[in-house]
Length: 75
Figure (cartoon, rainbow, N blue to C red):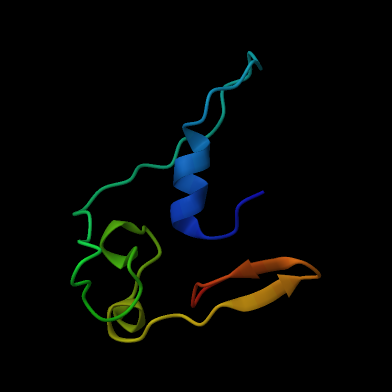
């Protein structure tokens, strides 16, 4: 049950044995270099929910459940 929009997209393409069609999330945009990443969220250029805030400020890692963490401004 991914919460981050980029994670949702990745998981939507995982193989399944179910015959039901599942919703696929498209990933577009450029992959960010890990050597010298731009400011903000590293997934902003590929995230369908990204807004200006995502490119300016890195989201803080926060608890969204007992043992669950997520770093996204909009989760």
